[in-house]
Length: 141
Image 1 (tube, rainbow, N blue to C red):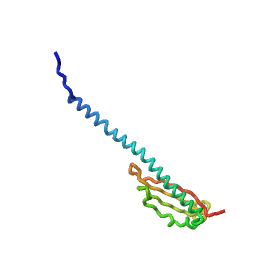
Image 2: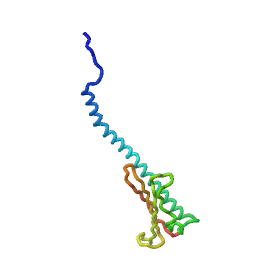
Image 3: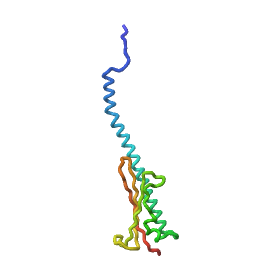
Image 4: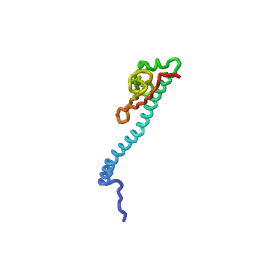
């Protein structure tokens, strides 16, 4: 005698599948979000380091330029704040010039600390800052 077979899911199997999916999907979505953050934040920090170093190298090049030199570098207006950097939306850059004596803390002439700061907002909406600095001197051998 042949028995009739039914195809499909029982109500209990359907409820069990819904419960398992309800428990598994949120952690999977959280893991995908965290993976995105862990991928994006180092890239943004790398861009910020590059932008800071680029500006610092430009200023050092101005210092050693035969047409610009020390007189150009010591004028802060020559390096205005950049609220947006062309080609790099979300990044801003500022330059701070501090003239000192040889001890690098007493105000005076002859030495200058140049600090370049780059700000950006990372993937977690946290404002980050990267800063690079160096010291240049007025002395020319």
